[in-house]
Amino acid sequence: MTPDLPAPDAPADGPADGPAPPGGGHPAAWYALPHPHYTGGNDVALLRGGDELFPALAAAVETALHEVWLATYIFHDDPAGEAMAGVLARAAGRGVRVRLVVDGFGSHRALPKLQQWLAGSGVSLMVFRPLERWWNWLQPGQMRRLHIKLCVVDGTIGFVGGINVIDDRNDLNHGWSDTPRLDFAVGLRGPVVAPIEQTVRALWTRAAFGHDWRAEVLSMARSAEPIAQARRLLGRLRILPPPQPEAQAVERPVRAAFLVRDNLRQRRAIERAYIDAIREAQLSVDIVCPYFYPGRSFRRALVKAARRGVRVRLLLQGKVDYRFAGLAARVLYDELLAEGVQIHEYMPAFLHAKAAITDGRWATVGSSNIDPLSLLLNLEANVAIADEPFAQDLLRAFELALTQSRQVTVAPYQTGAWAVLGRGFVAWVAHWYLRLAGQSGRY
Image (tube, rainbow, N blue to C red):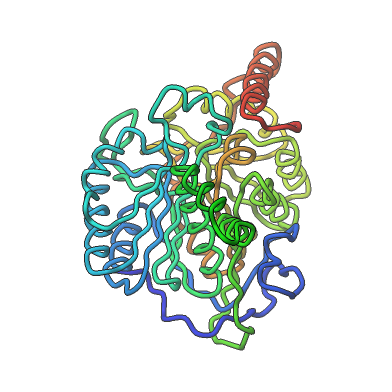
């Protein structure tokens, strides 16, 4: 079933019960402003894992009338992927315009099977930065991946989160397990869906342009109006929401902001939203994240929050899937524990959720980890929600996960030479990875 999201009314700004949005003006101004642009009049539903997301997503696609846009890092060739491919193919078969974009690295293993499943269905599949040949790795930007997980149906129902199209019990490197990963997504209706749709459209168009850029350039050159055609193409490539009607009062007050991290205007949008929320917290900061190696500004915000009496809790991986990622997080433990930050490690299964709650009133869920890959390189998307009922729902899921976790009271790497060497090694690797990826600036 789809999430409990009533049909949308006219968009509106809700009451000022959460972080204040920037000033009014043109709806596209959210993209250029330094802080998230919250809109009211939204409905939101927390979806726990693929067991809740996939039925909701399938139900939305099965009732689609016009178009479906889906972007994901991993679209795997397991039963969950096959079922979703079938849902998309059936929608296309009844005349719905279905556009799917997957990442060339994340979905590399499954691409042959996915293409086989969708062949002749009418689904238009594009691969973002494909890796079909070894020399693809030499092309600029190949380390910047499409890590986003987004879907929009008929411009009215949106999904944002960290859940790939793969069974929660299936891990690409470790195989199948009995316990599902801990992961979250959000189902949405309302004005916040518009920028989500435009983002997926832009990503699909970027991948399509990269797939056949020679034909695109020749078409523009031969056009009677090449400049106008180029402008239209650039408009499709930009991650900007379409114009919205004037806001009117509605009963639903949920305020939400869609956050994108790209390499143009929104380089630090998600990181800034996190840091602003931590700085404004008065009671509590709760963060769940599998890959945790924040920069100095982020760490400083956490430490200052703990020093002023805010309860700061981090829920990180206990069952580590990548050794270096585990090392990166744990070399920071001594610094954070010394300042009063609580650290818990999730033990039942792999942890993949990327979410946070502050003061039990503000929350964010999305694809972005808190590490250099997500904060400085990859294309990422989160939704920030200033709504106490939603934040409390997510907080309950966080508290439940804590009961299945172990609290770290002593850092695995003590202060002294080993701590210095460990932190120095991780920082050195992160620095040079970013340099090779073309990212300037200090982390």
